[in-house]
Image (cartoon, rainbow, N blue to C red; front, side):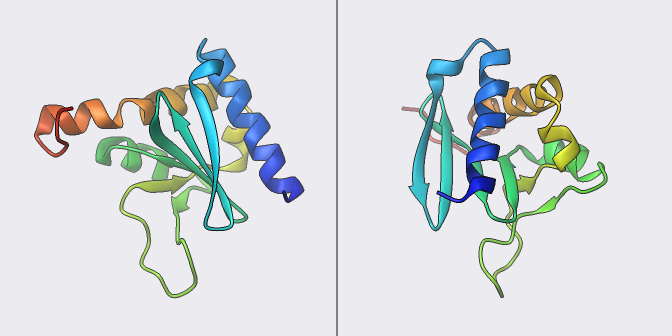
Length: 121
């Protein structure tokens, strides 16, 4: 695994520990990177372009307002992601700040359910 992905994984693990949820975080190799799951729901995509969090639209706007944030482009020529936002490296290095964004990511499915966009299981 590339060193950059290992570093992002450690940052995300530290953020999950900060939230008191280290055992809820899982990783699976996917599309040349790592997909992270929090509470069995996808929450982040770690790529060579950066750590991208899956966020609700309002949270996407807030994160995109930070310098260095951008929409993930999964592969060259692809459209920007509608759900995943690359987190600025300064935020990734700040465990408490990243934990706050990770917590927001963990709330995406609940927000979708409230709005009727996700099926209830």
